[in-house]
Image (cartoon, rainbow, N blue to C red; front, side, top):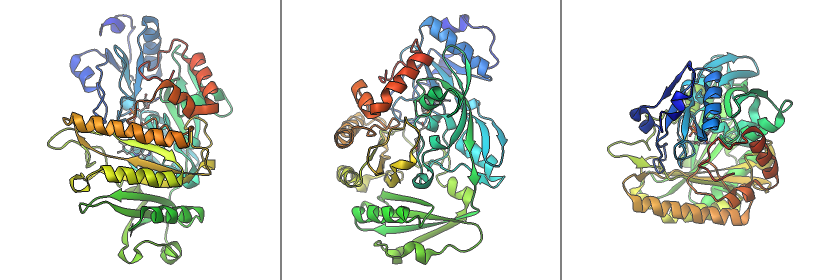
Length: 452
Ligand SMILES: Cc1cc2nc3c(=O)[nH]c(=O)nc-3n(C[C@H](O)[C@H](O)[C@H](O)COP(=O)(O)OP(=O)(O)OC[C@H]3O[C@@H](n4cnc5c(N)ncnc54)[C@H](O)[C@@H]3O)c2cc1C
C-alpha cells in the first residue's frame, strides 16, 4: 500500500518517503494520544511537488493530511487510515520583508518570521504565546494571542495567500480575489487547500516590553480587572494565568507595556486594580525576548523528560461568567500538589468585533473570554487520559449549550461530531461547505476529521 502512490509519481524535487522509520516518526502529534502511520510522507521542495501528490492521491482515492510542525494535540495533523502526509516543516523560507508586509512560506515558524521582521523594526501584530509553531498551522485555525484584544486574530492580519487545491491548481487569493477560497482556507483546518505562501501584515515593533505580574486571590476579580484594562486600553498585552508553583492554584495577572525609550507609566496602568499590587513582579526585556519567552519545543517544560507525556489540552471561547465557572471546575478537578511545571490555565478577554475573518467562529457575545487548559499527563496513564477527555467533552457541552456558535476550539482534544461542527459554524457553514465542494470535490483533504 505504501508504495502505491510512489509508483504513480513523476520525479519530484523533494522526497516522497515510504520508509517505515519516517512514516512512524510522523504517526502522531504533540498530543501523543491519537496515531496513524501514513502510507507516505511528502517533503516538498516546490509547489509543483504538492500539486503532483495532491492530484495523484485524488486519483488513487487516498486521503491527504497537511502537517506544519505537528504541535496539534488531538490528531489534527495525523493522517486518516492509509493517508498521505504532506510535511510542510521544510517549506519554510522568509522571502521578503517590506515596511507593511512580509511574504513567507507557510511552513515557516513564527520564530523565523520574527527574526526576519524584528531586524527591520517590524512585527506581525498578533503572536501566539509560544511562537515555535508554523504559520500555516496557526492560520489553519485562527491564531490568538495577548494582543488580540487590539489586533484581532492572526487570520485577520493576512493580506494574501498562495494556495494549492487538490486539482493541482495554484491560486493567489485575497479579500479581493477568489475571496471564497481565501476565507475558507484561513480557519479552514487544512480541509480546503494547502497554503504554500502567506503575505502577513506588519506593524512597527516596540523596542522593549515591561511585563507586570500581579497575584489575585479571586479569579473573578482578576478577570474583571483584565477586562477593565483592555477596555480602557491601558496595556498592550494582557493575560490571566492560573498556575500552581507552590502546590496550590494561584491566579496571576500578566500585563505588558510596550515602549521604546520613555519609562512606562506604571502608576497609570496599575491605578484602581484589585490584585496584590505590592507583590508585583517586574520583568523588563527586549521585544524579541518577550515574543520568545516560552522558548522552543525543546525547552518547553511539558516536553518528555524521563517519560513521554500526553497533552489532552482543552480550550473554548465563552462569556465572562461561564469562563469563571469553567475554570473553577477545572481547578477543582486538578490536584495542584501533583501539577507539573507547564500545567496551567490561561484566560483573557477579546472583544468579538475585532475578529473579522468568518471561520474562526467566535461566540455571539460582545466580549469573549478564552479558557485554555494546558494539562500534561503521563502517556502511559490511559485512565487519566480517558478521564481528561471525558471532562473535556463535559466542559465543551456546557460551553456549547450557552453559546452554540464559537464553542468549538478546533485545536483542542475533543472529538466533535458533524452536527457539533455545523452548529459551531452556524450561518458561515454553507459558505464553508460550498468552498469544500468547489475546491476539494473528491474530499481528498483529511477525510479522517468528521467536519464534512
Ligand atoms: C505550547 C503551545 C502553545 C500554544 N499557544 C497558542 C496560542 O497562544 N494561541 C493560539 O492560537 N494557538 C496556540 N497553540 C495552538 C497552535 O496554534 C496550534 O496547535 C497550531 O495548529 C500548531 O501549529 P503547527 O505548525 O504545529 O500545526 P500542525 O499541528 O502541524 O497542524 C495544525 C492544523 O493546520 C493544518 N495546516 C498546517 N499547515 C497547513 C498549510 N500549510 N495549509 C493548510 N493547512 C495547514 C493541518 O492540516 C492541521 O489541521 C499553542 C500550541 C502549543 C503547542
